[in-house]
Length: 68
Image 1: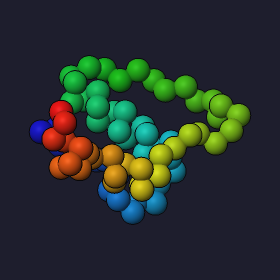
Image 2: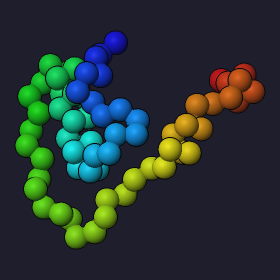
Image 3: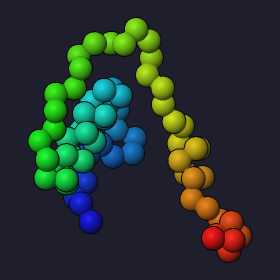
Image 4: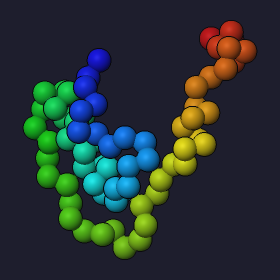
């Protein structure tokens, strides 16, 4: 399993861009590939994001798994 060293931990107060950059770099390190530079523009609005409630409930329940 890849190390999460250097990745933000829950509750860390970091800007979204900093969180994304650290995950971006960790993913490329794990894949043993160079990480391309990320664009520096602001994009004109707030980035889309997922709430904790969404990803905490993303795992299928045992009942849902039975049909798979």
